[in-house]
Length: 312
Image 1 (tube, rainbow, N blue to C red):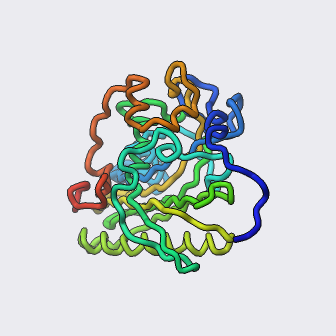
Image 2 (image 1 turned 45 degrees about the vertical axis):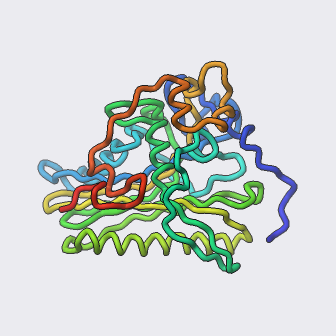
Image 3 (image 1 turned 90 degrees about the vertical axis):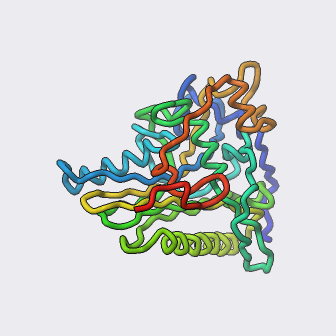
């Protein structure tokens, strides 16, 4: 372990410094008039497709990407800026550090061995994705989504291609043992699988891909002399038929919170003692409707299963 500066991560200070300028919208990190220097990391995995009818090569890519932004956790209409993939000493994670996701560690996927010989647990990322959706809302039931037109810094990757094929996106967020020692790490990945593969073939390929993703996490940690505690990972995928273009997006928007996302009489750091459900109750949010199966992309609260998606 490398010697570190005498700096202590203070989650409460970070969260209290991550309230944005707007009452009803989250804002992108680095937008003006925030309460401090903090930001909140959120997670989103999305897949989408569009018919190529009356579109050209450029516009079919635009629309399929726009559908990814609009599907599940709603981030439609933002100016997405690409950043690297870390949540550091001035960042906290929605669903983990505040408004904590229910059953966060309820679905263990596998153990990842580190170069030190230690192994860390790798959990299903769905609870963190679900927490983001419950913060931002959906296109038909918006809550505190990033303000349309706002400039929002995101760690992101995407893949767009004409069918027939499968498109997929994956993400991993890995937390440090000592949050004061550095930055938690995002890894994003996105690509395609051949059209003639079955659901089971794609599933098996992507489960193997998750292990490659978390192995890359282990190597990055070794490079920086960091010790990791746990990781959250998962993927979504979608079959794209002929005469359609598919897009898969994996991203982590870095935002500041809407003022009205803080319950009356509370400060932002009070959300550290709340579950995501308790937070919803505290600001009297109505229940969310379920999203369509194609937006689920086979990913659910208890893992990646055929029942959570639409096969070809």
